[in-house]
Image (cartoon, rainbow, N blue to C red; front, side):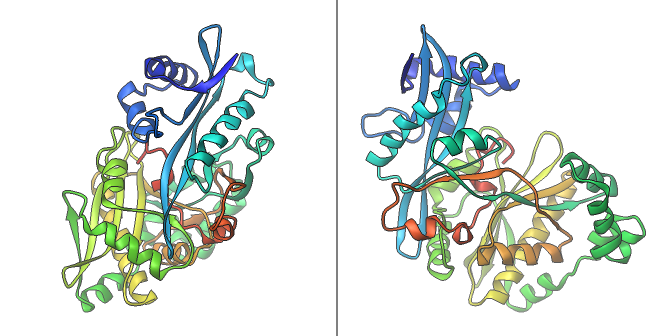
Length: 371
């Protein structure tokens, strides 16, 4: 068996292997959008395969993604497309592919490899740790949708009772999650109007998002993705699976916040990303509330059954988003996939990379099939 990086002529076979195993219909063009945009200096793609007798039996990809903190931009890589042919499991093929990819990452200056997966055993054996689990923010537009989202997550009846008869208030006691949404506070809109903030739909990715990303990193501690205009265009507007809609918040003509959202084919809405940077925390909370409220309203008009967003850490801005989301009727569901992380080759940024509370994570980090 041979472990090496994929060749251009093998992309169709590799993609077909994944489609057959997962029952998907991802096209070769979608594969290229996700994995072939970033190239190594020699032009190869950081996508490892195992080949046996001329057939691909294992895959593991890295997607290089730039992060930013107060000291500037640095390189990380997201783990994606993990698959071993069932007949070849137990042979440490996953570890062999990562031996290759660790070397590729080290030579390329990658500070951290990270991702989301339920496959804890294989990643732990390869040297990854599991610093957190994803959680969700959920806004349901009907009691049935709320019930479905709890039961689909394997939740028992007591948590549902607490939502419907406890913290959700008298409206939910009456049996209607919709009433709670309709009673959500309009305070963010009033405060935003008083501060001269307006929310507008964006037909294209604004170049100002790059400056917003720099300002966010300078203001808030920790690390996050570097949202320059080029990355936003690739990840959101040029997404061949589900392109995002964008709303921008402006104060005096300056971009002070942005939200990306989608409606997937099953009728579920997703907040893909939200970021804001204003004069103070209270104004940030107001802007986030305005953006989430407007995005949710538009998704509901588009026919969404509910709206979901990711939450991972207790980064201060993540906490602020959760606070603002609750004013719009969102619930915080503490269950999801494991976050995997490899930082053994990290140098000057080892401390923040090893503290998941310093990561601000949204659905922008996922592969993008649902936004």
